[in-house]
Image (cartoon, rainbow, N blue to C red; front, side, top):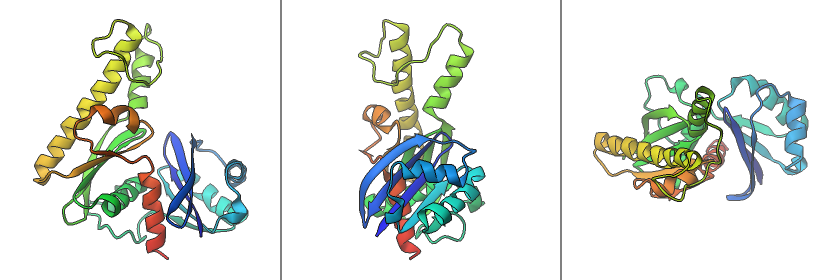
Amino acid sequence: MALLAIDVGNTQTAFGLFEGEELREHWRVTTERNRSGDELGALYGNFVDLDSVDGIAIASTVPQLHRAYEDFAKEYAKSELLELGPGVKTGVPVRYDDPREVGPDRIANAVAAVARYGAPAIVVDFGTSTNFDVVSPEGEYVGGVLAPGIEVSMDALFARAARLRKIDFVEPEHVIAKTTVESLQSGLVYGFAGQVDGIVERIRGELGTEARAIATGGLADLIAPHARTIERVDPFLTLEGLRLVWERNH
């Protein structure tokens, strides 16, 4: 069976094609909130043979695209659409004051983390925001932390500092930089790595256990090597969670 798993974020959309349990191909594109079902059909048709798709599992943080994805699934993929949300079986109880407030991508991350690494676990997802999602030793989603994301933070800095220009998001050669560009890169890499370590350590203290920390998201490979609390980088954790949720509902 071929499953198209789609993680629609506020800034980027990651998607991949599973054949059984294997992620055969994967891509990342810019999220555009005003796409129609026809436009989505044209977009995904550039990457995937839609006639081969048997099902679509989606986690979306962009409500404006809900109808467009329904149209895309019906008219172009001609496949069943499963959108992760309230009422969908996940196998991970959500212990949140209002479970409807939890982003579906965060639930997908928790589902995959438990399946792949066991509980307790902390998922650090580097997206538009940096999300910290916590699974208890009992395998329950118990909450987390939301912090400004890397790209959002840097864009705000560039917008407010007239003499600063945008930089490549790469690791600098030295912590103590000799140029403005390297200074910004040092602040980015080591600043966010320090933030991750500080938050993960506090979460572990509150849980009372050394929960394993897994990083995912577009910039995980840049930050995680410098964060001592991150044990593993799993770039396709959200897509794997969607695959598992699809299985648990079929």
